[in-house]
Structures are given as structure tokens and as C-alpha cells.
Length: 278
Image 1: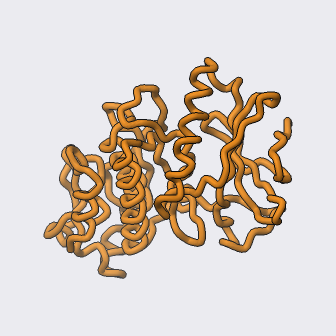
Image 2: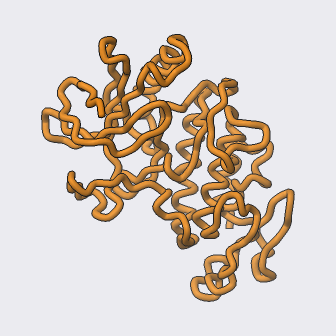
Image 3: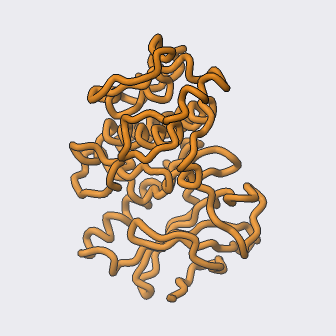
């Protein structure tokens, strides 16, 4: 394994891969633990594409601190001799110990770790509203994320944040990125496509099902409704199917307001208003 030389940082180990690069756990000169993403030239078909990615990240670096829902980009750099560029980020919580990081056992906490079971309705709403606000801030700057999925949503001090920001691009950019099941039929690159992807994420955490199962409901929804009372004010619907328990038909779903069937023509401000509606 090649260990990249990053100025003023000790590289401790790889903690993730994807999006044209590796993510390393690193320690700065001050002793702070950071995440460093290293993006290699040889993962791109052309120098132009590599430079475009570097320029995009350099442009996004100051924007990353404009909203709490973005992962903070602390520094962007480039190694000509190493054939890569890199960016230093705040570190995600640990899956088990949260903000208390033990280097030898560290694994970043992402929303992917929550898949396979349902989260409480209040937690789904909290996560949804925070991420809608982050998307709104991104879209208002003419940018889109293009690959929103559970593994690209990390937790820092318990708060969800949009990660893998290297995929951010100007709205409408046509190069294809994304992950099956989260990308809408028309493809990525628009605010509506980002909303679709986030809707699929919220479907997974609220129903405990795979995004490819949409719009099926959780088999234990009635039990959850009886136990918590949270679902009694929800209606789960899409343009392809209108389904839901009899007791959940009076109002629109707060989380489901940004599900794929409800997002056409919606922007984040409209989605947020519907999320707050009781």
C-alpha cells in the first residue's frame, strides 16, 4: 500500500475508499485527528477531468464552512510528484464510542450503519430536516451533490452531515455519478435529483427496508404506530402507489414529503415547509 505524504500530518491508516480516492485517518502536528481524502490522477481518464475535480474542491473549501450540514474542509493541497491532490476534513464520530476516538479501533459513523432497522420517527424527522437545510444551502449556490446515500452521510458530534463532497458539481453538470437505487430515472445533477436521493435514504431509515423496495411499507408499521403513536399523523404515498395503514391517512408524511413520488417540482424550501406541517 502506498502511503501518501501529506504535509504536517501523520497518516495512520485507510478508513474508507471510493469516489476516486482513499480516506485516511491522520494526526495533525497539534495532535488533532483528521480525515484526509487522497484523490489520485491515475483514477481519471484525463488530466482535464482530474484538474476539474481539484478546482471544484478548491472552490468548495470556503463554502464547506458556510453550513453546519457540510463536512468542514480544513485544507486542500496537491502533490505533483505523488500524482494526487488531497483535502483535510473534520473527523466523523466513531461507530461505537462517538466523539471519543480510539485510533486502533476507529470506524467512522455513517448513516449506513443504521440500515436494516427502523429509526424512531422523531429521529428520521431530525435527520431529514438537517439534511434538507444542508441541501438547500448547496442548491442556492448553484451546486448539487449527485451521490447522496447512507454511506455519504456521516455524524460529527452526533449531527448528520453531507460527506464525499468531492462529488459536488455545478447544477446540471452532465458527467454521470451516483449509486443504483438512489439515482432518479432522469439521472443526477439537479436539485430535484438530490431530493429524490435523500428521499430514498429517509425511506430506508424510517421503514427499515432497502431503497429498491420502495414504496413498500415496513411489515411492523402497525406495531410501531401503536407503541409510539408517531406514525398516526403520517401518510406514506407516491405517484406510483398510494399506500398506508387506515390510521395514517389524514396528513402527509413529514419524512415522506421528500420521497420520490412527492418531490417533482419541489425545491428544498417547499420540502422543509411540508416537513414542519403537522
